[in-house]
Length: 47
Image (cartoon, rainbow, N blue to C red; front, side, top):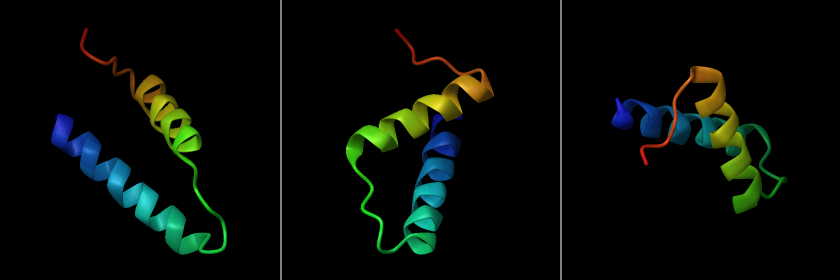
């Protein structure tokens, strides 16, 4: 399941970069984006 999430995030990030080539994606926005996915999917990071 973790690998599915990783692949989903990678594909999503890849499509974002393709759609917005001139836009630079900073690490903080990526973390927020991943966090929003986790919350929306109902996943929590293991303690």
